[in-house]
Image (cartoon, rainbow, N blue to C red; front, top):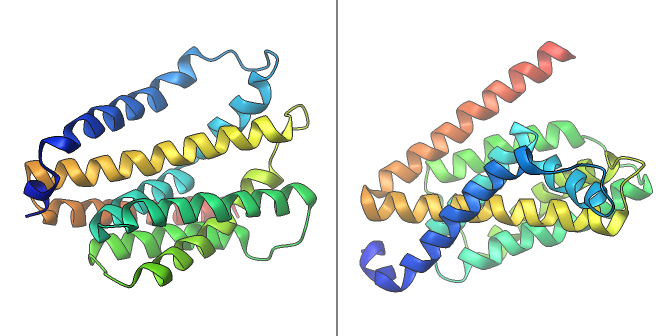
Length: 207
């Protein structure tokens, strides 16, 4: 059983991830945007959590990583973050990358389906897949960086937010498996898919 394998040693991590989730929700109400370095960091931090398309994909990465288990629980999210940074640099430099918005929306459907179906593939292809999807998210972060934001602090901001959302997904998957069942994690994948439909409908309506 997944829950027995984790045991009491994972409880501190669950508390940490829960606290992190609360922090992600609470910080927007308490920040002072535009004060010194906060401008760059805060713009970067709020970009992923300010868009449902980003939130869905990044939480789904955490959910899927937890489903895969083993080294994937940290390799898969790390791959996403690493390639996202590369995408951010490309977006900041204005290097052309076709299909950014469709790629972001597609990532919601792909990752949601992977979680819903509890898809298990080898570690390297798993990391490569989320890396490809991360490129589009990172590019959007870099391309939409405000003029008053400093690049490094902005990048740190969206990396911290992204890692936090991955952590929320991992923590959610662990909690659902321990308290309920694996099926509930798969249902969370269905929720990601429904969210992707909502994002797609809004995108088509605004086109």
